[in-house]
Length: 180
Image (cartoon, rainbow, N blue to C red; front, side, top):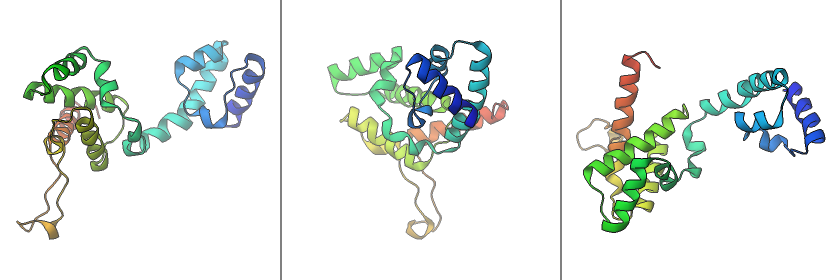
């Protein structure tokens, strides 16, 4: 940790990058490439930076970062997502295929972050979808788990909905091919 703080101090002084301890975790490899030109120093910095910032962030639930999620931003980065947004503006309605694509695009984006998603994350994502597509019903995307003591059938019921079901199916498929 001390190594890259000293390295940052040096580069801040010489290059006027103005990186602080607070912004250190927000660096990206592209920004580091711009900031640190000598390859050897950059490799050493990246190695230590990844150990400190990338691994600790992957262990945190996505829920801690999910306040930043914007469904429209995620969809607008994807060609199919752009088509869904355009179609919704015209018809104020999502087809079954559009709903499935929204879930697929969002989960692909979030799973690429190597985050483990929780029920709280799914709740927040479902709320974000309904916020951006007001005619949608939140229960299409997420229905919270029901504890045993509140269940009519005397058994706990796991959470469900398009988000949760697709996520579980993806995890199962990834485990089958030993990707996890």
